[in-house]
Image (cartoon, rainbow, N blue to C red; front, side):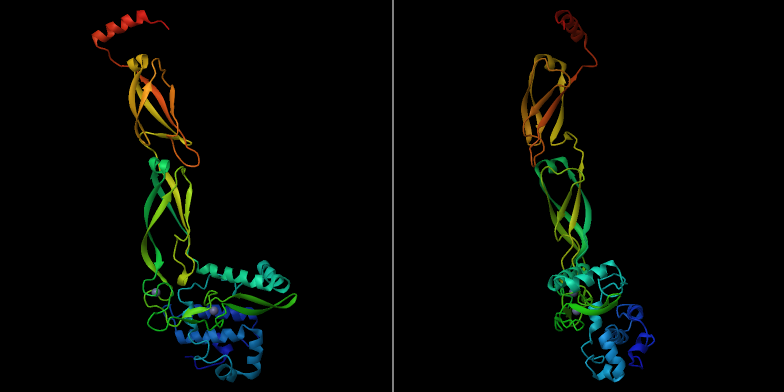
Length: 378
Ligand SMILES: [Zn+2]
Ligand SMILES: [Zn+2]
């Protein structure tokens, strides 16, 4: 514990410090003394937070200025055991450098919109919108993966299992972040369970009240009484998850399948991110894809080309008997309706004839061919 209980001394700022300087000093010290950090100090951290709660609010600050430090220990702000006790727990696992919508921003365009929205717009709508935005940082991150599938998978659709190394819900606290043995969740002491904090901002246009989501409970209004020891209050832990990815028929190279909620688990049970699965279709040994059609090249013996023949060909649905018409030309195509890639519209299988000429002839074959040459003339 510090030997002083003067809020200005705690934050190391002069009594005439601007609101901006108050914020800057607080950010720096809170970062430095965060209990999760090496050399962090929970008591000091609480003290800094108490001082900030008073000095960052112009109304509370002017009361404090009038009534002095006695106000800090006995007054409505409470001492270390007062309503701000336990404050630090909410910060666990939370990155100060990120902008959560309140706090450390300067006066910018977005703030201007906030001000006008708050002053002239529908205050309820505004509140709800801000609250939503405040939950955003707690949402889990999206995950992007690439998945190799075969042509046969995309032709008829398939279910593929993928194993992801990711944040999963903490098994100990079931995602709440609260130690289940010592009290679960309690109202956030910073926002009194409201999920949002009101701040008065001075600007060119006068003084405005700004409502922003509470950065301690991330707008939920609830914080763990004691952090879960397994996840340190995050509500999530490293783990593996096996997910089934439904590959619809007709998917193309580079298409992305989105699995809602398949991404990283959110902070303390907040919404999970999404899983983006980018499809990469591996070339097939037998079929070539052309849009929704597949091309199969059929080797045709010279004699079969001349005389015609029945043969069986592979299709995406198994072997099929086909007829090679007599007199077929190299490159001629036969179409098997509906045997291509399925999906919104069914493609065909195209059989492309590849007439094979023998490279060598036996003596007898040569003689017969010479006779044939005299016979056919085209
Ligand atoms: Zn946990
Ligand atoms: Zn809160």
